[in-house]
Amino acid sequence: MSLSQSDKDSIKTVLEKLDWFAHLQPSELNALLLGFDKANMVKDEIMITEGKTGEIFYIISTGAVGVFLKRKLIDQQVATLGPGEFFGEMSLISDEPRSASVICLEDGLVFTLLRSTFRKVIMSNPFIGDMMRKAVATRRSENRAIEFSEMMGKGMK
Ligand code: CMP
Image (tube, rainbow, N blue to C red):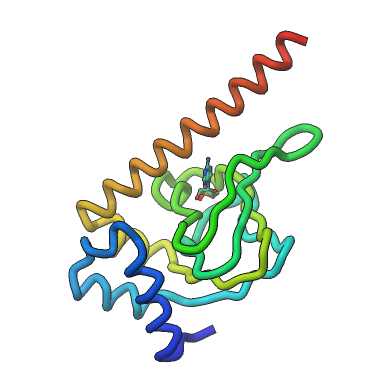
């Protein structure tokens, strides 16, 4: 879907709520507004599949998603993300496959950026790039802790 002026205004409203918005230069903000696309998401829609190659970065405008790690029997939900939060950054930064599946829990709207714009605008901004890398490190260690506790639980049975 291409963006209308009112979409651009609502992206700006979403971006303004993000802690890192203030660190965007006017030219970076323009590049983002040109680069963003939007997509509706519906409950139960699979937005990202664990193990696949990543091409898109998402910011949630409305609605909610769950983040799930693949498990032998039932996938495990590790996080719920809502308006103003982002997902899909890990594989774009690391060039590794998608680290988890992301599934829509509540109908909504997401703004999307292709890998090239994400890298050019988001990751080349020193403050925002650093914030993204820290978020990735935190999310990775959360997932490792969950995997570890599951392993220990199994080992003790
Ligand atoms: P990526 O690996 O590209 O695709 C799956 C996404 O799920 C990942 O990027 C993150 O955006 C998100 N994700 C993975 N683990 C967590 C977590 N522990 N908390 C929040 N989001 C996560």
